Length: 395
Ligand code: PHB
Image (cartoon, rainbow, N blue to C red; front, top):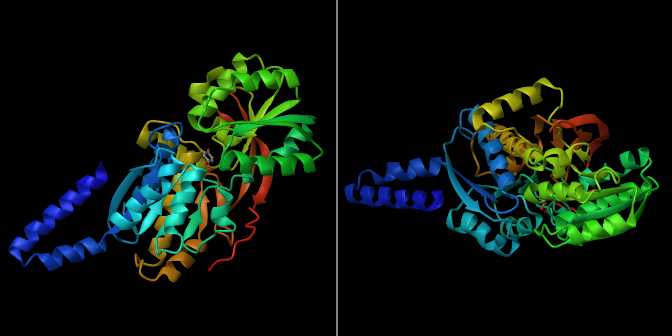
């Protein structure tokens, strides 16, 4: 593991320095010049590919600007959080207390995020959330040192209800994993769909990360709603779309969802994904020079196509590059550092966005349709959509 290697080599350097005496002050100064950045992401399990895309994006943004932050060399520390909430606190403590990171970039899963939050809230560690949408992190439990570059769980689905009703889909079944991300995505869907006049005829769920969809698909077939709306992501999303098609529902009951459903899985889902409609703060086919250049460079660097997770990682890297440049690499004045982050207007492949007062992106949401293994933009589903930030009082 990278972490252990770094610790060992540092120990060896110090032993060598101690024996020569003279070298020690120099080495200590060189080390404190370094900036310590922790990556706490899933590298195994159903969200493994999300973690990889995020890390790729973070590194790409930093490498584009010379590979340093505020002129300081980066020392990286990595933890695989496995999307396992029960290990969230312990994994975050490894980075914060043992590795003493200045910055913690993490994570993907909302439950694990709450573990990170318990560890970083009230500390001086700058936490950039590159995916997990759990409401509390930028609502009731918001914090000066915690910033999200992705979304809140209800943001994409707040944009979903109206386009469904515009298509005349008046009775819908909701289905998702039963944990914060699925439940909060449902909140957004319920709000937008019922306000637009729709009726949710059934709410179905299964535990995360189960992918035994068969019984629930049989139930959907017997209800015969006008449409199904859902939250799934990663490997589970690909399986859900394949099972949905295999159950014979694809052509009779249109499938809609928050856009994670079709992110990074279009190869794995194959024809089962064609025609699926989603709302998301990004789309592969966004026709801007910024997005085209990003996609080209990412594909060249990593030999794979970027997705929304890569974009969120990239924006996390951009925010760090710009904020650390603004404070000239000085992380000792926390107030100045957090202000520098707050002020960022991010020139993202998704389009320009800024942070809300509760440190969550204010951004556009696109309506997309899968066509030829591509998330094709159909239109704008919501412009400058901000999360409510309900209950946020910055300390
Ligand atoms: C979450 O757990 O917050 C989560 C995970 C995967 C996604 C979106 C949200 O694609």
